[in-house]
Length: 107
Image 1: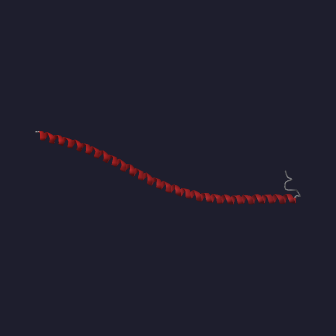
Image 2: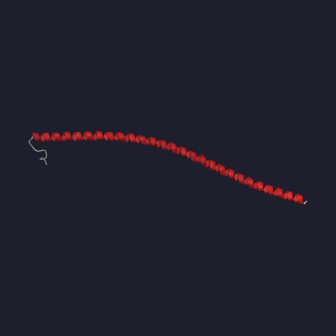
Image 3: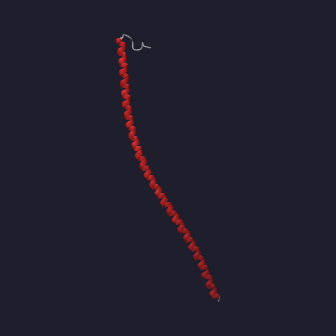
C-alpha cells in the first residue's frame, strides 16, 4: 500500500511537472512566433526604407541636373541682359553725342 502511494505521488508530481513544462513550452513558442513576426516586420520595413532611399536618391540626382540646367539658363540670361544694357547705353551715348550733349546732362 505504501509503495502504491509513493508511486501515485511520483506520478502526480511527474504529471504536474509535465503540465508546467508544457505551459512553458507553449509560452516559449508564442514568444518565438512573436519574435519571428517582429523580425519579418523589421525586415519588411528595412526593404521599404531601401526602396524609398533609392527613389529619393534618384530624385536628388534629378534635382541636381535640373539645378545645373537652371544655372546655365540663368548665366545665359545674365549675359543677354548685360549685352542688352550695354547696347542701350551705347545707343544713348551715340544719340547724346550726335546732339552734342554729355550723356548725363539729361537729368
